[in-house]
Image (tube, rainbow, N blue to C red; front, side):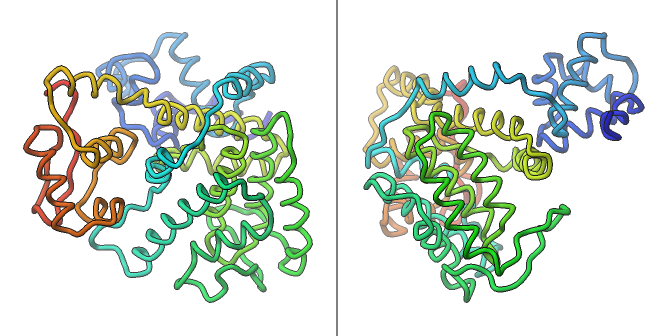
Length: 369
């Protein structure tokens, strides 16, 4: 029995809940919903005023093992998930690429960031669009593709943009030896030959390639972003949805990635990627928007094409949007972007927070429409 697993038996309920909340990125309300109890009940456990019943205690222990990378995923359960995803499939078109790229793009430019951070965000967006266009055009997933992604991502930021590192590096926060830089020119072609294979279990292959890529750590900087772009390129090539790894789930992702890299057990990471692909499919199939659009029709609200696209962006995962985001997305002037947002605000679909020119806009709750 591992030290961490043994420690489970010596932890009280609050300590377990604190670990689950922190590593899972949950609010207390979300944590209560996940366990299937009211906020009041969770708060009572948290403050040690009461104790969970045996079934809930077992559920908390299960979540704890899952969140700390110690849960065992049954092989048949994982295979069933993969088969369900394979059966869904998806045909990409130029019309839906822009929306999906916007959702994968999680470095929204906001005031207060440094010039380098603004440039990183702009480059990340360009790399996403390049990846989608390249795959849609039937491009091969090879070493040249990965180097091109890195050159776009680190353009103007890193002198070695588009080139492998020529020095040693360490991965911050974990003890994980990376590849000797002298071996990278041999390791990467071998890895990319693996990535280009046509396998029945593409999720297993993509997860394995992703894990090995991050362990090699071929670049001075930008390895995580390039690695996730490569992962999604492999999924898109197989007509699967992209893996949507939300910011609040990043710590969980890093935990499972580290386990895959240090134990050769990829099951938790594969299971996590499966769940991330499910979220990608839900976005592609617009499961989150149909009720909203039905309400718009019911109230006879007429929207221009650009206004509907802005609504899509907000519904598909951008929690808020700025005038500058609309400028970039539609390639229009600031004045035109403000017109789009003002029109939606007047129609009662979005709400502005802060000044008109620099504030953020959020979608109104369905229930108030």
